[in-house]
Image (cartoon, rainbow, N blue to C red; front, top):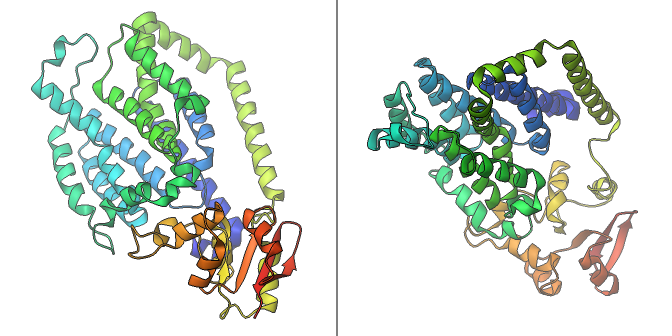
Length: 421
């Protein structure tokens, strides 16, 4: 990201995000096609999934992660369903790549293998042919999957900091971050229309139809539904991975009640219909052009969310090396970007005891931000000299009345206080 920014600025990063998003969308589309879904159905589902997962496509390491996860599914289908042994080596390479770019999510690389592994083991241990609810799986190269699991576990230790691959995700979900970071908080299906719809559809297909499904499809869909309920950000796995296997279930149900030939004829008619193709083309083009043109005129740094003016004033008028500033969690990263040492930023884990022994910075910030304790003692603890806050923050209402601090900068949104000597 730094190389992109250094060479091309924010526009370079934005363009890179577009390219990676397109890559994820194309892989998702091909994954749907590899599962022998019809062209029009695969296209429609991939477009819907990308639309609902749009918030995940930002300049963060998750952009690489989802590309790798889509590649993992693509390779698993190629190895186990198409019998192409070369995909085993692709999976090994993807495991190494993920542990290098986003080790916190590496454990999910192993989780993605489990539905196929359980499907294989159940067919070995039980007589699934007589099941009224599950189709008989005939996976190829099953032994390669077993070897992959055994190799992927030690690959997870190939990080600069030993074993963080298997501890970071637990620490993240166990720390104070879950109290105020919305994407780490659990969600209920009733709070999210898309999650509620997917849950009802999955339950309806599995519980109230006579359709037989592959066990791995069931495990992926219901496993990712439960995973989404654990934390808000996990719903993107349901959109981008779970949609593949939910579509498999939907297609199986259509084949059961309509017949494969009828379904095939319906989709082929839609694919050959000039009207349908034109409508889809213009619909997607209008949305794409509208969004892209909006981004062209929008400022990359919104002064309503980030203290742009205050930051420039500090750099021009203050000795940033000697000041000890108190700032909000959400925009500490912007101050860091401008070269100002901050109290806290959005890399929440490094400010907690789980990842940094004896560090209570995030907890102390949270106590003041939620007005649970007086700020004087904590400011004294960290020898705070300046406080940069939004005017709407509760802390600002206290500082206005505090004679020990006085405002030295103010704009429409932010205000900077200095401690009186």
